[in-house]
Image (cartoon, rainbow, N blue to C red; front, side, top):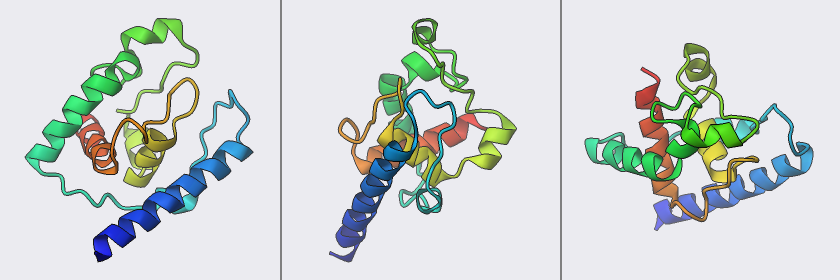
Length: 137
């Protein structure tokens, strides 16, 4: 019961943060500011082999076309889109982006990336975060 309450509060908080961020960021802006509260959220899903496998499957299904197989921003759809997604595997990106930030970006999206909060459950989005981390080795 307590875990469900925490999950509901977390989702409500992130939804509110997403709406606030969308209000303050002009469309087409290249900087993707993530609220500090969202950056600070830890990944509540354990990085088990099953979670990583699920994250890999979800990434391949929903993210690979744009982000590329290795999350380098070189997916086949990038020749048709601007801006192309950034390379998420660099040391600088790994050091700068928290799990909460990755989760927030997956959840809220930013053109041309759609928000994934209606396609993926909260647990699935956290599994994708774990998988992205494996690509940053």
